[in-house]
Amino acid sequence: MTSLGSLKSTIFDREERKQQYQAHILGLNAYDRHKKFINDYVTFYGKEEKPSTLKLPIKTDKDTLREGYRFIRSEEDDMDPSWEQRLVKRYYAKLFKEYCLADMSQYKSGKIGLRWRTEKEVMSGKGQFLCGNKHCNEKDGLASYEVNFCYFEAGENKQALVKLVACERCAGKLNYKRQKEKEQLEKRQQKHDRRKRSRSKSDDDDLDESQESEERRRKGKRALVSSSDHKIDEDDDNIDEFLEGMFP
Image (cartoon, rainbow, N blue to C red; front, side, top):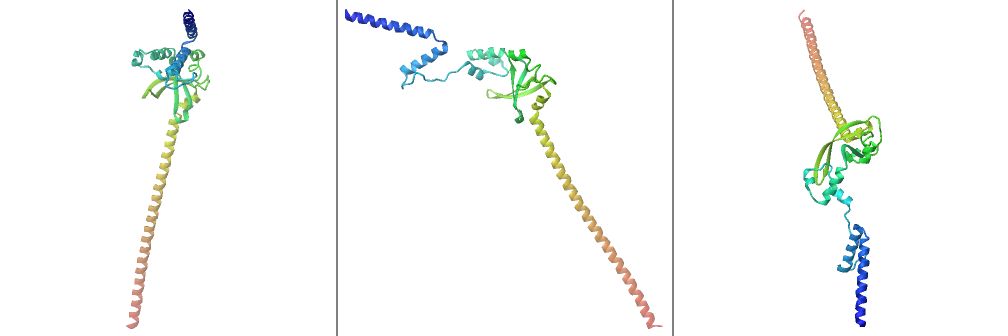
């Protein structure tokens, strides 16, 4: 009789703990339930003892969006039935893809990031009635530009023609690197031309000096010839006078 009562008590305690465990599990959200199941599994079935506060890598919705997001989605992306792609597609559908916003923090190195606008940014006029640069809220002097956006995504080089509204100062940042490279090329070309003109002038000066030296040499030769002729004429006169003295 005593053993029977002990057995009933054990069964009752087990059922009570089971109900408490189920109530505790049902009171957790999906993320906490997942962590508890993983920790319990590692604690009871792991080869090594692990602390109950073991932190395991968790893939969040934000991580999923980072991995699956595409600046411009293709038909193949839309045909993917996985829940990750469905999540990314829902996020993509909420973006407004008429105008872009730009991150110009590294414009001097030619790196400019572009993204689509959110509903909140559309409501505030950012990117359409305010400058599309993330760090500029200029309202005056805005113009719309078609930007050939070249980017690297999912292991591929891609490009897309998008519209960006920018003020005059920020518009200059779009072509800053290309403009600087053009100016440097022009400076190198001008320097090369100056060197070329300098060498040409030096060659001309050498040629002029050579011609002048040749002219001086020819003039000296002519003067020598005239002096010799004059000396010969004088010798002839002296001979005539000498002969006249000998035969009066």
